[in-house]
Image (cartoon, rainbow, N blue to C red; front, top):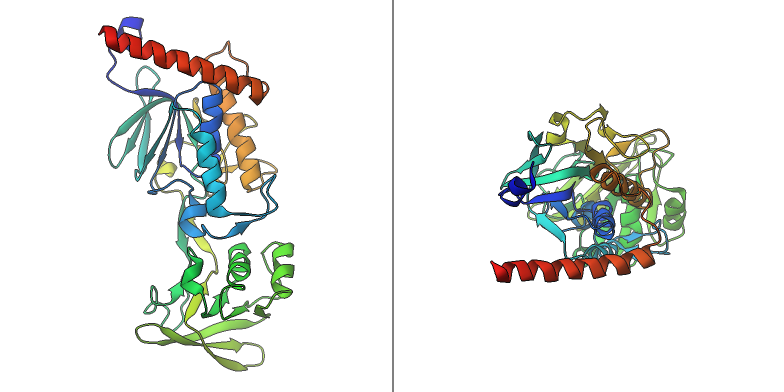
Length: 358
């Protein structure tokens, strides 16, 4: 495209666009700003934060570098503030990207359920895709969903002074036990296996708390209640011993089904429910990168901390892809940030001057 054509191109073309607006994408937005790239994040959710805000905003997170523990919602706000330092960053929320295509001049067209976006590079940071909680084939569970039966714990106040039953052996189930133990009247946590998929430290903390942890071979037999859950029957399947509990909140957390949705049709190399990338976070499609829980490579760990490192690698390589003269390494952030902010101010002043002349 010639300089004249570029000036009269009606498309608003960004340097990099992130599919997703969770912690990893927001850190990527920060890095894009640091590298003086116009960046946009598009997410189907109505607020930033991805799964942290959608599933457990009031859960404490313990494995983020530099934070002994931090509430998910507070961590999200810090990521958001970090990304907001650069006025060139834009968020488009409540939009689902359904199609990614490349136009004749190499620019990507991201089609959403609302509009089209244009970008020179793409970084997919869609987490694990869509979360669909696994249902239990237990009497009255379906009837009482939304009436005291929960799959996520979004607000602690919903469980204050209540008798809570938690079912599950994974990280989320034990996180919920640690969250609700101090605020609920009582918490009973059951699991059917003798081992847990949750982190060992989380299991230890729950065992040493006021939570009543019953395992192995404990399962939910039935729920009781009409307009709201009023009770539950649990059973020790080896002995047949049953207990009838008075409960007014039940958290079922036996896992999630994940679905990549439209991503499966974008021509990316997939490995099960993940996008395969190389050490530069490049996918098999030139100009498209990926980072966070949605990617796979040998030795991959699904952590926020590793996702942040991955997206920094992706953005810096995208910068070098767009401008071969640019170094992949950004240098020290202290010096870089000050230089970038001065240049952005100069650009804004020049832009205002051009608008005044027109």
